[in-house]
Amino acid sequence: MSTPPAAAPRRHDIAVLRGDGVGPEVVEAALTVLDAAERRFGFASDRTEVPLGADHYLATGELLPEETVADLKQRDAILFGAIGSPRVTPGVLERGVILALRRELTQAINLRPVRLYPGVPTPIAGLTPERCDLVIVRENTEGAYVAQGSSVHAGTHAWTAVQESTNTWYAVQRTVDFAFRLASVRRGRLTLCHKTNVLVEAGRLWNAVIEEVGQRYPDVETDYVHVDAMCMHLPVHPERFDVVVTDNLFGDIVTDLGAVLQGGLGVASSGNLNVDGSAPSMFEPIHGSAPDIAGRGWANPAGACLSLAMMLGQLGEGEAAAAVESATAAVLADLPALAGAEMGATTAELGERIASALAEGTAAPVEGSLMSQLAQVSELS
Ligand SMILES: NC(=O)c1ccc[n+]([C@@H]2O[C@H](COP(=O)([O-])OP(=O)(O)OC[C@H]3O[C@@H](n4cnc5c(N)ncnc54)[C@H](O)[C@@H]3O)[C@@H](O)[C@H]2O)c1
Image 1 (cartoon, rainbow, N blue to C red):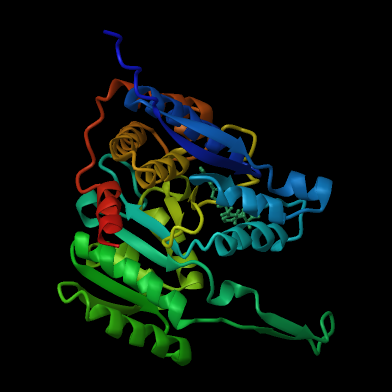
Image 2 (image 1 turned 180 degrees about the vertical axis):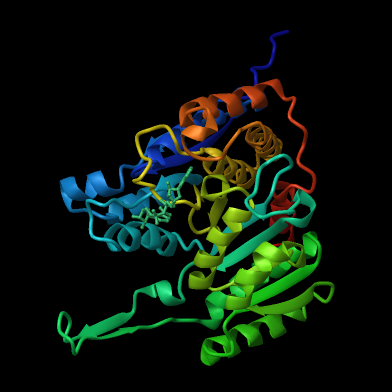
């Protein structure tokens, strides 16, 4: 009798968008970790490089060509570094590539965990991992980021600039619904962060959505904080929060503060989630291209590696996702500092350390991992 052929390994078709500055450095480290995950968990990936960013723009004038969007839509997921360069006018690449990608690929939700892992130093005195485990769910396609606005008399002292913020029931509802679902598999608490006392029109819409969607999740308790008060509560009482839902601009700002709680910008991860299956999701560290440290090996790759973990979870590689998260957390806990030369190892060396910890499989599992909660949220949809 002939032996049946061995099953082909699971394959995932991934677009790799390294971008500018430290983007290529942290993505390279994450790919070293992906190699180790594939060896240990028996899957494989096809990786297509997507050359978007400052170099591509300066050489071709292209920001996000239609063919690139069409090609990206065929992939299973996108691993992204960062975009932005002092060689290009601020806003051109950020709006023309990052925001355009999130919009074109209907990446409705920007998911940003704020978690302090055991042993990782935080600048917030007295903060412990038990008190810092929340997720910020940011609306990702509209608000102030729809780029609607106009100027008259620009360049004169009569200059008048109008910058609008758009809030549609449709986009707010899908964000809020995702946030409720996530809260229902976590600690059952959802906080709206907004500025309803001043931005009253947008605030009324967000509140009405919370009220209507909330009726489907009677076990989730709701809470509200103004975004200015959030900047006080987040560092002082992070344990108050489980899932925070907020608009695009407020989410962008408060998640940088969240990153500080967990050790700094280099540690924080994110997923731009397409929740209707029309296009791939995109996973990226929350930091930018950090031109001040680019090329020196001083960028912490943990945010990129934790974004990789989220990507693996979304690709159905739940075990690998949890292992990448725990290996990254274990390596972080051993570092003397979380950024710059003080880390005592380069970006590439840290990628290798995380890959080795993953291969050895000795890192303590992370309790209550977001990766497994996200799998439960997809089951609920
Ligand atoms: N999604 C994105 O691609 C994205 C996000 C934010 C900013 N940007 C762009 O990036 C460029 C730089 O912006 P910025 O300086 O305001 O923000 P930044 O996040 O690039 O850097 C802010 C500070 O954090 C440090 N830092 C960033 N990443 C780090 C890492 N992995 N390890 C250690 N330290 C790290 C930097 O050295 C810098 O001091 C701008 O062009 C901006 O528009 C892009």
